[in-house]
Length: 162
Image (cartoon, rainbow, N blue to C red; front, side, top):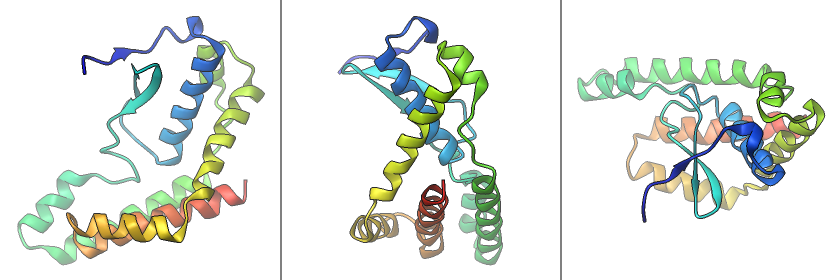
């Protein structure tokens, strides 16, 4: 399959690629991916790597609590993640002037692409959510699966109001 090539410098990208970068940043902002946005080119598409720190989730401590049998502490941590993610969504805004400068695009165009990308979460159906829940339950305890499902619903609610 070969290595994925890094994307950049942003100002030298085609307008189509700049819009793809905007879409990837929108996804990262929506999910509150606190890791660095890592964009690569793969099969003529711009893709993002590493969502391990998304949804306010920091798995290392959570895994430690579960591994040591401190399930109540893990549940408290999940509640904290939920509160933090909801707070993040309250502040979600796609008017990112730094990204606009980096891409050499008008701020209104950047915001428009990001909002259109965000609106795609409204296409997630209950059937999709049930499928995701079942898949998550194959690898995570119920409270973690429900955390992700609730986060998707919170995200949909926020985007619907934008």
